[in-house]
Every structure is written in structure tokens, then in C-alpha cells.
Image (cartoon, rainbow, N blue to C red):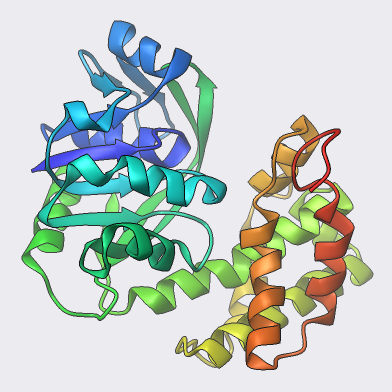
Length: 309
């Protein structure tokens, strides 16, 4: 199986390295210092699940040099979806699957608009990992899994082959019969987590320890779930309590990547997280007053330090 990793950061770098180490034909699409380091020294992953060094590793800045692939693991930031999808065009064959492992709920539609609906595939990734330095991925904790599925729920040989490659690579992976629900389950936790930690500038443990901020977090979950159901996601009864229980199970120092971006003065994925809850709420007539407040509180930071949105 021929796999291209578009965006070999924490998600793409970790899972791509595992796949390459297991023998899959993997090419990392990476520019700048990260790409140069991968080409020169290989891609190294430090993880409690076992360290990996892929050397030599294939890293190319121009997708046109790769040719057609079976799967594109699409792992770019949400603001780069359209431009990255355009760059993927040389990779697309008749049956190529572009699996979107983004945080939001609309990446699949945006990829489909550029590459065609037949190529857009839903995905969910759960991992705490980042680029520690060029050519090096640091994974914290042991959680590391992928879910993926055709958006219409059908079985497909292309995803069955990818599933087999993931199983061979040794990480937890699931071929989902309803990936839309999985995407919304993650979003119903992630968007509130991002919004609350970024607004308070505090990790999840401190937020849950205080009655007012705990209620804020719970209200954001409830609004996100209501919006998802209005849009047609078949989210189960009681999911709000499950998400709160999951939050309590996390290390108290955990914070969303959006808070990390805020602290570093980087651009935020606000428009596609809390902003998406607000927009979809208005579209489907679901009140989202808490999400609107969080969105307004963070909006002036959305483009990064010293810049206006």
C-alpha cells in the first residue's frame, strides 16, 4: 500500500512513522527544516509505546514527485485544508482515499469540494504528540488510536487494506461503520476543551475543580451535542455525562492545543472549533449563548499575536 502523509506533525508523524516502520510504503510531504531533517536523519518518534526511527525516510516537498497513492493521511491544520487539498491533486488516482484526521467537523466537505466526494474519507485521531524539533516527534501518554470510515458507511476495499496496514503497524485502529458519529463524539469534547482551556488559560484539572468553570465546560458540551444532533449526527443519549467523565479521567495538567497556540502567539483553529458550533447553531436554530461568548472572548487572538482577524 502506497501512503502519503500530508502534514507530518504530531498525528501524521507518529502514525506515519509506525506505518513506515512496519514496512508500508510511506512518503512524508514536508517542507522546510522538518522535511530536511527527515531526509537527512530520518524521522524519530519518542513514545511511551516504544521509540521508532525510520531511516532512511522518504520526505518530499512537492507532491507531484510522488505520483498516485492509495491513501493520503490528511493531517494539516484546519486553516490549510483547501490549499493542502489543492497540493494533493497529483496524488489522486481513481480510487485514492484522502482520510481527514482534523479536529473539526467540516474538513471532509472542504476536501470533497476540491478533490471530489469519492475521495473524501472521514477520520478521527486521538493522540498527544507534537514536533519536538525538526525530524523528531514527541508522544506524551500512551493514548494513540485512529478511526476511519467511508462517509456513507459502506464497506470498501481501500479502507480494508488501510485497516490491515494499521493493524500490522501495531497501533489501535478501527474501521468505523459510522464515522460521522465518531467525528462528532470527538468534536463534542474537543471544541469545549479547546474553548474552555484557552479562555481561562488553565488546564482541565483546574477547570473541573472549580464549580463555575466546570459548569462552563459542561454547558459547552451540551451546546455542541445539541448542534450535532440538529445537523443529523446520531449521538447517543447521555453522551454529555460520558464526556464529563472522560474529562475527569485525564491528567489534570492537560490542556488543548489551542491554548498552547495561544500561549505561543500562534494562529488558532477557533473558527473551525467554537466558531463552527456558533455558525451551525445559527444555521439549525440551536441556541449557543455560551459558545458565542467563548468565541467572542478569543476572536481577537485568532490570527496570532499582534494581528487582527
